[in-house]
Image 1 (cartoon, rainbow, N blue to C red):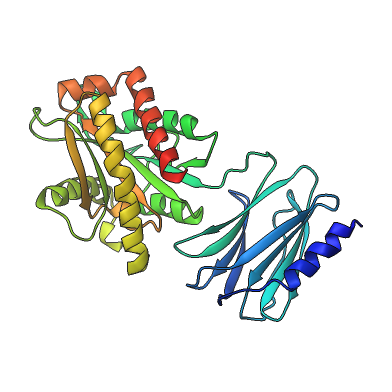
Image 2: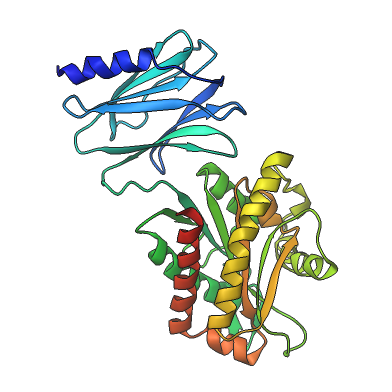
Length: 339
């Protein structure tokens, strides 16, 4: 065994931590492949090193507790074994990786957790994005000018996934013409511990003169206009038997405020630029009580890409070149948001 193995163990045992935190739980996610160390409200202090010769990742996390965690390994494609060692004020984890497996250790917030991403590629993707094409199956969404909302947003969503796949773990709530409840859409994001949720929609109005693009983020307070739009979108779920009132806010007030601020930051820049480049009316960004956004525990936006009954908007939105352009612009601002 190489000397490096012993040297970095000694280094970590005597590593000095400046504040307290506690490991609450350890989880193994299969998709994306991760070891997740759930922490308390304190920002976790940790450090890591890797012995390439032995393919041994050592991770030490400041930990007030002296718990013994369940380390049964469901990630056998990536990990040979994992062992725990408790020190005076920290816990060390020795993770033997299989051949040609790459890792990335990072700290995530809301809630605090230390995450080890595992991959068979050197380009380990740190962030997970869920793309949510609205409606689907028996729910066509808004209709007008011979078009259905469910078809257009699915097409844009597929283009967006292609744009983001290189740099992110990307999952679509639906990639076919199928009906999915709003609650299950939220569950996809929460189950994957998504870092961002993007819901794609097309607006509608009785007036064919209504036009333009707008983006919504979740807010418990909203204008009368935003309430009207949220009620309209939520009504589709109600029509097909879902009680949207049962979809409750699951994050703390602190996380709610943070998610709202992060969502607004992405929404404003994206909407201003995209509406300008598409030569569509900029209808600004709004906070509203959308059920699909209420149920997620990460930042999220709902993009109304235009009005389907407006001839100019619908003509632009059904054009494949424009759909690809919309996807490319969204992906550009998503990358700016993370990097």
